[in-house]
Length: 226
Picture (cartoon, rainbow, N blue to C red):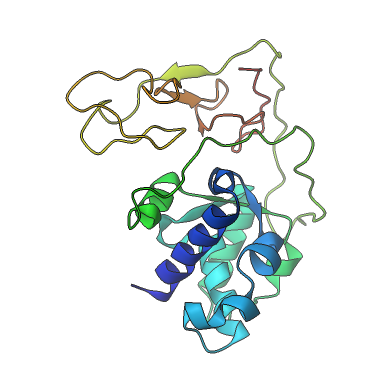
């Protein structure tokens, strides 16, 4: 197991132990640093020697290394990835963009929980609109100016599309509650929580959405109530 995989597994374990719903909710970079997995309380479990090594792992996570997480907005993740490629990454960027949101990848979370098949994995709680504030600003040198996005009518509903895999294949889990799905048959709704198993996509740019989102993470379009 690599240092980053160990870091991610401990991050998932800490979130699940406090409130499993947080596994599907975006985390601010500062929350990871100071609340969920602080260096001083976890350095022995992580097996790292210094705070710099710890922050380098956080930077790798935020940069999308290993496909374990994504950072929103995408230009911030690109900035982290660009910095990670340098010989001496500027770790202060973690605090400069500390209000950026990191979402753990569902497949990676499932793998981290696989060591305990009874580990809790529950539906996300919708994030109230207007709570994802940003105290940082990008300059022209940091990223291209964001394009204007057209707000969709409130009654506009994202189009449901078929998942990339055949529903009901052995080993599939519900997109919302993590419960096992029946194999070798069409599964449109979870037999445990009743949620639809078709993916939702933004009607403006077709980016895949997660349950409870009110805005698209790619183009910012507002999503109607579902």
